[in-house]
Image 1 (cartoon, rainbow, N blue to C red):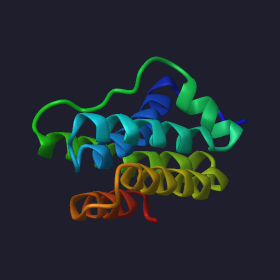
Image 2 (image 1 turned 30 degrees about the vertical axis):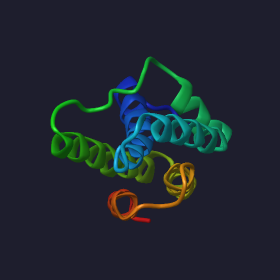
Image 3 (image 1 turned 30 degrees about the horizontal axis):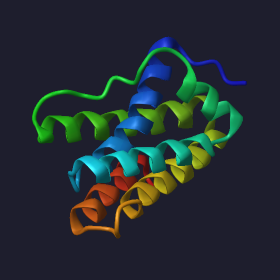
Image 4 (image 1 turned 90 degrees about the vertical axis):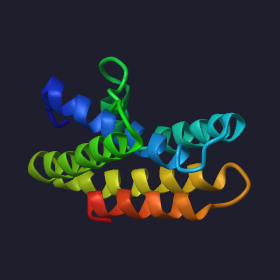
Length: 132
């Protein structure tokens, strides 16, 4: 099992949950967000045991705060940093991470009555940030 620092684990968690949050908030609405959050959590639960261990470790993910642009920037930065961390420490997990994050974003977007253009745009940004 790959050893990550506490900061690396926090970055990986922030990236994973932040990606779900970013797509969910691309099409706001209370009930839609609730359904989408559940879909995202289920998708992340399908990760490999090693990634699940990272996602579940530590405290809550640190979703960036501020304006929508600051939120997006913070999440995309965490996604880029996560890809770098995995490439350096566990290249075999980078493909899995990309697959899980992409699946989670797709499931979030489809959870509430179809995919909106704003969700498609958010997913494209997430995929670009992780090199998918």
